[in-house]
Image (cartoon, rainbow, N blue to C red):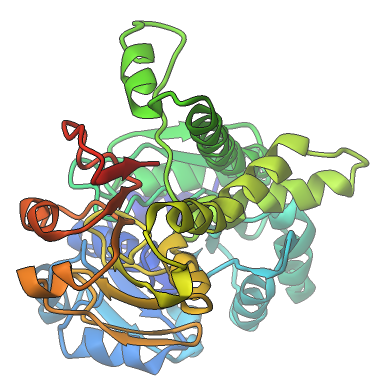
Length: 429
């Protein structure tokens, strides 16, 4: 193990560069800066960098006052200049990993970041990839690219994978309180990365390899997509049988072992759940293995907005083309200002082709995304009465649900907000 790098980490004198300042990278960078490390945040998005320099946070979970204090202390600064990597002892890569097309990973952001880093990799540097990707990426992509410098992993510099586990909007578990999994390309790589994260994060769990760490993240998210897909299928089955799925879930979760409640809805959103398991599906095919559960769950969740539209057609008292519909909530998650892969957006897209649709969301004043160009309506009694149906797509806290109930003609409740209501005005998913 590099004694020099180890001592720098233990003394909080290691200089840290975080590439990618989104929902993962920015909170992580600030966590290290708060512990006294000198941290550079590097991003190609000039708007993000400018906002940080102006001490204005663009992420709900990061208060501007908290970020401003660290910027003022000069323990954290943001830049678009990748030459800052030359000064870093530690580089953490937190760039996006979307899908190019259905079921095909796009690792171009990782490739770009690693190629920029390759120009500046030096002896005693620790490199950690946090971006979710398929098992083998760290060893098959990052290692050979960085070793073109003539330096060798495990001898001259160190490489590991540590899956991000950020949960936007979760006030109980910020980045410092979520256990961190680390796996290196060598034992020394693992030990150094565990030592690093241990300075800012309360619990670190080491695994034997980077590939095991990569697989850990995909297991976590595949567990969720499969169970959400399953409960969405159960919801559709219960509706066909005339059974209240919400009542069934409440009853099942009284069992103190062997059951974990998941809840139906319009699908899954955010970056992790809709896309990450499909990296595993894609990689498994390269090993002649078909991940049937993942594909089936992904397809089931993707179809939920279309299913909701079909249900809506049977609810309203006129042809859908002559109706007006209000969608309540457009973010992918309750109380989180984030539209990434939101199934409510997909729902609006489908409704726009068949009817007049508006939306209300206390967090999103206007929508200009995926061909949708709408402003949130004012939620007044008269306005609510003008719609043939209101769809509760997201159960934000800051909504007057009593106002909606008193004035709506019909309510399609996909989130069980009106759990206690038994009249025909409310139709549950």
